[in-house]
Each structure stands twice: as C-alpha cells, then as structure tokens.
Length: 91
Image (cartoon, rainbow, N blue to C red; front, side, top):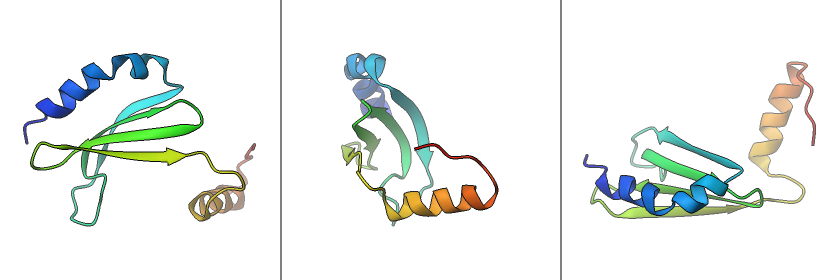
C-alpha cells in the first residue's frame, strides 16, 4: 500500500504532534473487522485522543476518543489483570 496520504497527514498535523502529551505511530493487525487496520497516527491532548489511519483506497479515517469519568469496561479488565498480578496502579 502507498502510505503517501498518511505521511502527508502526519506532516500537516505537525503542530498537534509537537504539542501532544501522548503521540505515536502504531500498527493495527490487518483484519476486516479491525477499524484500526494498518498504520495509525495517535495523538492526545490529555482529555481526548485522535487516531488517523489510512484505508485501502488511500482515504483517511479519523477516530476520536474522550477521557471518561468512572472508567470503561475495558479499563476495568486491564486494572483487574494488573492488580491480580500484584502491580500497583494509581488513578
């Protein structure tokens, strides 16, 4: 796949990238049921997180996430797993 659109997007988003409290490039396993398949740009300002990924046709997909109050089911499972292993977790 030609990742030029995603590379261009990363350059255009440089101001956000530089100011992000959390940022990175990651890879989602290629599967039809995975909305994060392929290369992703991840950025967060601490309250929200944005993931930009490229679809096979070259268009980009943006996922947006907000910080929760009270947690999520997935977060609870992660906390439980780490807690059962005796790992200290801070809120």
